[in-house]
Image (tube, rainbow, N blue to C red; front, side, top):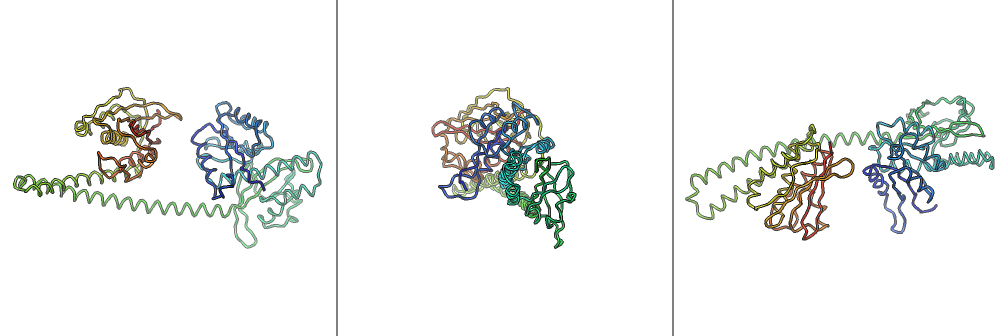
Length: 485
């Protein structure tokens, strides 16, 4: 068998969906370095570009979105199958056009996958089964139409297929059953051939039904219907697959996920309670420290006065860390209402909160007053700006010069950013910045490193992304995106 990768033509406009599919297909089991990958993905955004690809090279399978810039709906599928009738096509469907995908299957598509519910193993299996089914159908059509080979050879192709195969005529009378179908249905072919098909049927191209076997175990069977020619006459091919173990595995995963969610909620509640209790104790420490300084500060020796100041500073730092932890927990478990943001006011409030630090570092700012409208949660987005501006004050030049701005980016998003005049960050260190407890080797500031990880959680909860662009000696630009209204 050839080790050459399967060539997958992905015709998908949405860059995020395309990236996810490419990522899923790249995550294969470990293979020797000398062995090529299992899949080679060729991605285009327009149907016209995809059809042009078909003229240039051999494609093994097509992943087709029905909603493209230059074609929409069933017309997209009809053009593709007309151009490549012998290449298996898997339709990529969103939840709101699943019925359209079913119609495409009735017209000859091998499968459809709902975007957002695609998993790596499911995608790989769908591709391989689609290729197998297309090979089978192509062989059946070609051999039947040409009448060049014997019925025995044609049966051999079907009988050795991994799926169960049943062929019925226009009156729904069973004409053929392969060994895999006998095993799946737990019934010999003699009791099926010549009989009216007794399996549940539906207009839906893909359906499921239960089979009670002789050992009284119930199996869940997935069936797929395809129009074919059999012995020169119109017929239907019914592909059967036992998905019992798959259904059980999904149920187990759901149960484990629910248990994990319950335990996480308990742990979160425990951490929340402890953080509040510790904050209460810190308030007492700060109160007693202030009391000592107020009444006996002038009588303390230098070492005692220094120790008292350090107690107060450490208590303030610990209180800030606890506040960040509580904010992080609230982001994870809160379901807030997103609304249109007044970004000018939010930035103004963030700068007011940092007045002491801004004056301390003698920082200067450059930014306009007309900000693009986006949606988010105002208290959280204010925290994002506070973290980014504070970061610029700590790691900017001397004095810090900060520029704030915004610009549109693809997929209906707006990118907001803070640029500083600091030392810059090496590429190898940039990926670490948004992880908890990460602080790079910079000498001007010390801390616990929770701020940027909170920023990432907040922005992702609001539907955006975070990042940094930087080169050593050229400053840094920290950015985040939000959906445009």
